[in-house]
Length: 307
Image 1 (cartoon, rainbow, N blue to C red):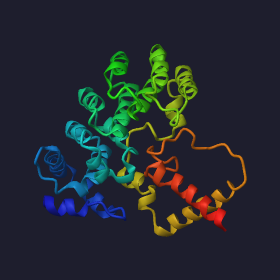
Image 2: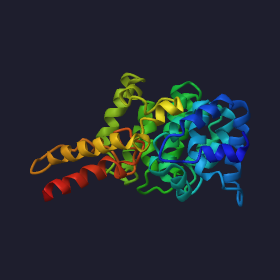
Image 3: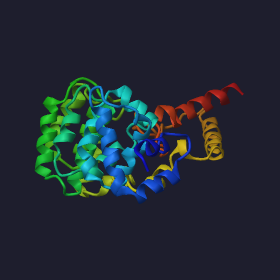
């Protein structure tokens, strides 16, 4: 299969291109160099960007295959502008990036460090790369002492120092690794406003930290597949909202509307209080919370109120 034909079949579309993904996986040896070249060309100044529409599936397939030769090109992709990132990943911008990058990790954390410390990179990607650092550390691929050293240095080196979502990933990585020695820095980060209380409160970090200290696997297990390596592309992506049949999505929207009816005239506890507007939606759709359940619930509540 020639490169142009391959990329055309993998261009992002409403339906999941199952047959194209299977065909690609069956010819992995010859396909990987094409994929890596397409990424390299996209991230190069003035390079060929014709593969943009296929990069979403290329990214996930390389993670599925644990293709370490793609680690550095993908790390450079993670440093693209927010506009480019949004065009490639759409609403699912942070859903799987940490899981894929941890899956292709080749043992050298520097490419991830460069993404995290690049103030021009997308703040949500930077946040997820911090969690990728925690993941490869928990997998034993990065010494715990090195992860601790870097996360400590981040307190002074991450820009901006004011509120930015990258700090959410920073505190998350510290909690995941149970790094009690860094707790004072996290307290300071909350105090200076680096971590917004609209995302979570200090007590949430403290609870997570204590849980990880008591049991290093507790947080990973609590979040189901959130901090596991990306798996089979078809199996994983077929559960995403955007790839589900329209009838299934219609039923889900109706369920959200009925659920919103229960809000009317009631005092409730927000079940998504720890979910940021730009976080992956807890429902697992792969979309940002603000464009999935948050929008559905608010819209349904307004509709119900008008009835």
